[in-house]
Length: 175
Image (tube, rainbow, N blue to C red; front, side, top):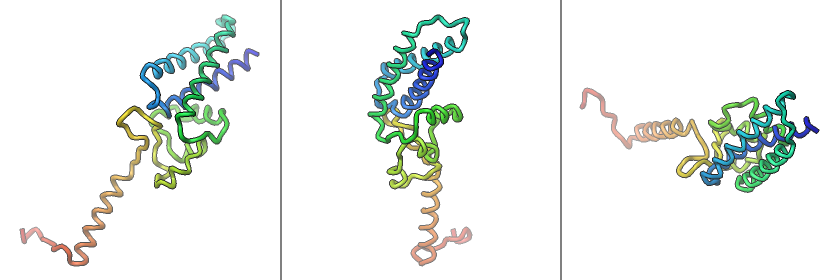
């Protein structure tokens, strides 16, 4: 029973971190603070459960933390418009292998976790980053290449105009 509760608390802590990050813009500041406190308490309880000498035997606290974590995760899933397509362990494994997930999750990785096909139909690419639904006035997607695309389009349009004699080339000597 100890190991089963440990694994369930561990898994729910990972899910709480993942969904709390992705849907943080929907929560009030007080709720975000409560989520951070719960994550810290879960980690502290997991550390205690790992050490048999330090373990205080308070399984009721573990069950209460699991229930509270599940409630917040379900609320966050309701906010998020993309549905989960993998099992919970795959999300935990992703967070373990990508400890800097809070800087944004690449869409090529996220497509294995959530159903985000609509994002690709809207023109986003696999190397774009999804930042979740951050606080107000911040962007959900970080698109690194758009500046390059816009400058390439500008230079293409300029070259097209010069080629078709819509603009005159002014050389340095003429100025």
